[in-house]
Length: 332
Image 1: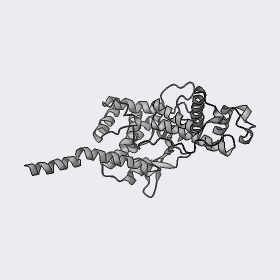
Image 2: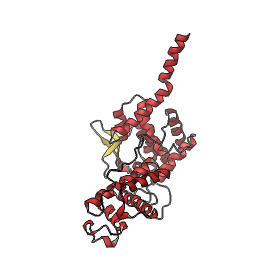
Image 3: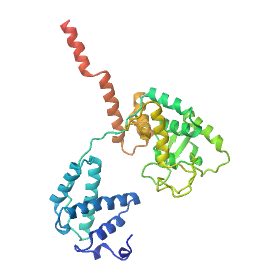
Image 4: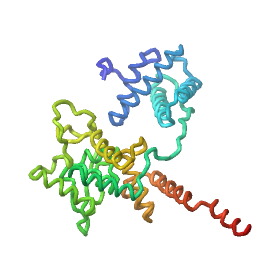
């Protein structure tokens, strides 16, 4: 934080204060993760840079100006998600600024664009999953264990990175084997995925090559010679030179996808997560089973998979085909 702000509070700031100082104090005052506070600061910096570049005066802005900025972002080709991120940051900032008597809340009635609830990454068919795992079995024990685990449990890349050897435990009356998981936005490993024999056996074979390592060691270790900073490592895991980065896990999955002919931006490591959700429903599973497996906090997220499954069935058994058959029978 700017040293000038260490003894400054919002009440001491006025409309004439440097806007950068106001934004910095706002971001620091938000009880959010550091990455979220950085996002607020970055998006607000973009907004106020636009204000200055267009000759507007910060103290005289109105809702019309915020709407004009939103429309400019849309004309620039920003996605609905990106525009919504900017607008939400602006709205949150002005709510805070008004509460602290710095600026009036000019953004209260400005709406973020709605985006269709859908996934940009495509799931794999059961046949393609089989091809992928057959390919991975010919690579090396670690990469096979990683991709096999993701394809069977729907783990995110960051969750693979966070996993330690000691996170494999046994739970419940039946001593079910699980991997404890620190999920998205969580501070503790308070969730789990079930390690079936098919998911666990490749991990066991890989760990047999690393015998004697402590429970705190990364479940999947890097073989690179890290000599410097933790490049592209998740910020909430203490850097360990043997811990893979999220980029490395993503690259491992992408290499396998390319090898089986899925060399497209729509197929990435995250596709394996969507593959699990979609194939649970394809196999006759329930939305609840898919939600629990993928650990979705909001069931509405899981319902997207149901809509995808319905779309697939529509292609193969659409009402239009039924109409054709009915009419053709009548015509005949």
